[in-house]
Image (cartoon, rainbow, N blue to C red; front, top):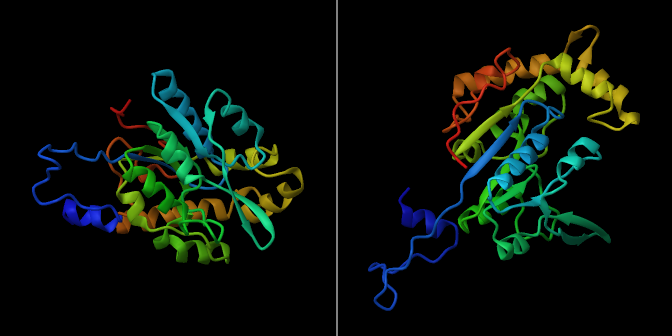
Length: 270
């Protein structure tokens, strides 16, 4: 796809053939960079990792804001937001109920260098400008804002059938694999099934009343059940399809669930 086609596809007016306005060559629109924290399962710490990266960049003088982060009641995650500028959310009314969504116009008006956006595969409430959050993120990138975001691997469209076979439940929120392939950086966030089980048992992932059900669904007996099978199946599918491809400065999916999980290639970005 040529650059002109790409610009037009995003609904932005393409420049005149001469590229000049009033005899002056306008500066080329800078597109933001996308970094994705790809979680191997819910609760492995991808949102925490994203916030920690936000603090790292803030400490280096980068203008960072929290555009949308969902803590799910996890105190450790909420504590990690301290010291970061949190932008107001948009209030969307649907069927006489109010819902919070990312305020795209607010983020664009603030225009930070970096926006932290949780849950990339999220489906927006009807009445929102875009159907999916990844479409919201595309607007931020097109405006030259770098985005750091999170998504669990089971939300990729190509893996939906694998998730269905393992869990018996279809994944309702999915996103195109191409979004991950096009990212400038993808960093895998994972932990062993045993460590994940401990986090669940300690109430670090789900509320106390949901812990028993979660442990039953994810693990069986002394041996990891669905969690381990999901890792093996998803890693195998990725290996065969090479999707999502791992771009520059990322962790490689071959470490899914293995002892090497979490090793990072050099990151040259600020």
